[in-house]
Length: 183
Image 1: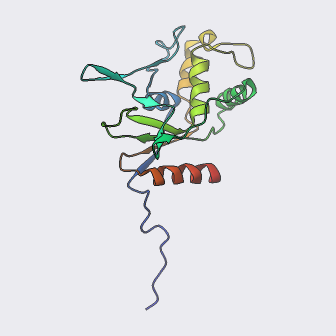
Image 2: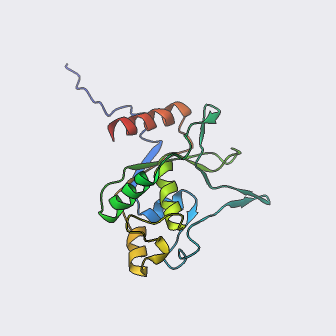
Image 3: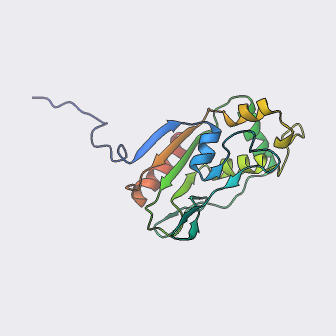
């Protein structure tokens, strides 16, 4: 009997990752930033929210995740032109790529989650919402109307991948490579 080939059988990532669509507000929340509505994201911008466990505050998400015992993210390198291109894409509802976040077990000493891919985009969005730089029209986030802030936070044209605690360092790095090589 001729056995049929099934390339999907035995996929080692299937039970370790969850790919979903989220708004920018949802991505920010998953990455440890509090931006629950446009009304609390005004002059004060976006805030990081730590978890308190046993009287100690621990960052809920780090932009410097660890694999193989060392940091695997580059530093923040985007120049203003990259930041403005990202904002222009958001304004025009153009796909901005994938955010990959890995969950860590609670016994890790760095954070509960780490941003494996999307650090440049996330840092740019948070910086813009915190009024650190204006858009291409010279306008800061604080200058936006409530409707424009809501529209910005509701932007959905990106993917969000959440890796479970069971994801090994090998799997996490391979998923990052695969996403970056294939889009």
